Image 1 (cartoon, one colour):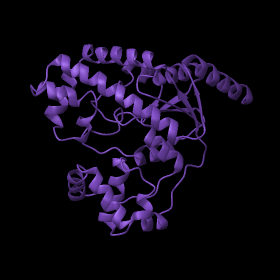
Image 2 (cartoon, rainbow, N blue to C red):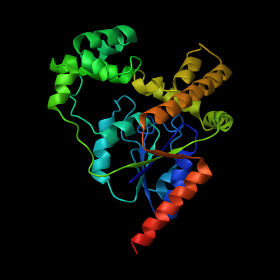
Image 3 (cartoon, rainbow, N blue to C red):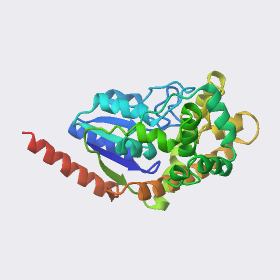
Image 4 (tube, one colour):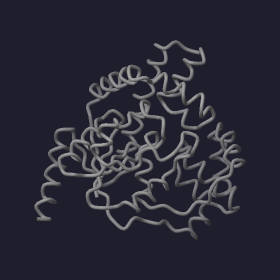
Length: 295
C-alpha cells in the first residue's frame, strides 16, 4: 500500500486523484479537517463530483463537535485495507502513528478533557509535571509536542499509571501490511503562491457562510480552532476586517506548511521525495508494474 504526504497546498490530493482515475484506485484520506462533516471549504475537501468518481475513505466520518484521533483512521484502514488503496496523508502525525502502531488508550472524560485544556495553556508547566511523574517517557517527547503531552497526562489521570507503565502493558497494535511513503515537495515560492490562490478560492466558494453555519450549530467545538475557520470567526465577531482575516489565513497556512515539511523530514525515515511531475512518473511506473504483474 502506498501513501502520498506533503505540505498543505502541495498538490498531493490532485496527484492522488489523477492516479486513482488512471489505475482504478480508492483514496484513503488521513486529514484532521476533511474527516468532519460540514467542513468542506475550509478543509479543501474533494468536490462532490470527485467523490462520486473515485471512492474515498476517511471523509465525513465525524460531526464538528466530535474529537478526531489516529485510532479512527487506524481502525477504518484495518477494516477496508486492500491493494488498490492510495493513502493521502494531510495529517502526517496520524499517518506516523498508524505506521508505528497504536496502543489501546482509554476514552477520556469531559472533566479530564476540560482540565487538560486549561492546564495545557501553560505547556512548559505541563511538560514539567510529566517529567516529574515519568521522566523516562518525558525524555522521549519534545517539550513543544502539545498533543503527546496531553495524551500522556490523559493516561495518567484516567488510569493512575505512568505512561511508561501503561504502554509496557498495552503493547502497540500494528497493521499487517507495509505502507510505502512518498512525499510530494514543491518549491517555496510556488507553494506560497498556491496557498494565496487557494485562500482566495475558499472565500469565493463560500467560506464565510460555512463558518457562520459552524458557529451557529457547533459553537464550542475544537474543530473551529482550525486555520481558515478561527480567522473567519474573528471577522464575524467584529474583531478584524475580512481582508485581515484573509491575510491571517495565508500567513497561518504558510506557517503550517513549514511545520508540516519539517515534520515529514524529521519523522519519516524511509521516504521517497520528489516534485509533482517526478513523483507522478515514479508512481505511474510503480502501478503499471503492479498491473503487469497481476496479468
